[in-house]
Image (cartoon, rainbow, N blue to C red; front, side, top):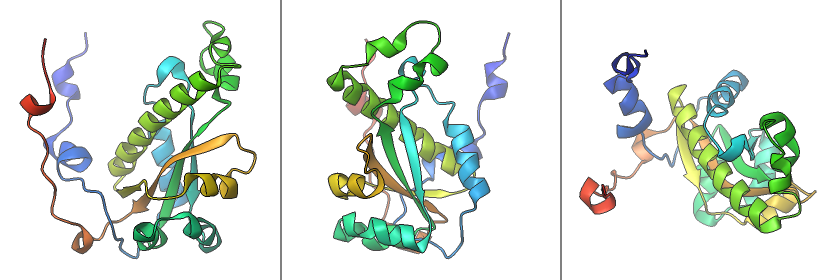
Length: 200
């Protein structure tokens, strides 16, 4: 039998992932390595998705040229936040994720659940990739990086630029790096348990 008390995270770890973690608007001049990016994916990939669909696709915009391609699609308020980040992840979903279900979910013919059903593909793909985007941020924090998630961009033109085959759809973007504590706003309040939860 597993002793769940032993598996509980320390207070320091919980602070890193949740209580003291912030969404960053500015960054220190310190690079993010390819090894760190790989570490993030190797952690986030284990987060659960419906029928193990794993529809999320990550595009890490890191070079100057790639950032210049990203820049025109950003809302004005996100330009500096994104351009100054050591890397920006485009979190998107593969509209043909079901093609990999023979490998990812071999227990049954899961591909038939989605093939030829565009509404279901969009609903399942976007929801589960969004979940994976949250796992991505937790994974980035767990390897010592900060995150700056952003929704302010033109998804249609960004997708045309980065995913011209039309098979990948962006959901949100997220800067990663070492956040500049001088550039964050005071933490906003959160709802108390009884304002957001009900036990029935």
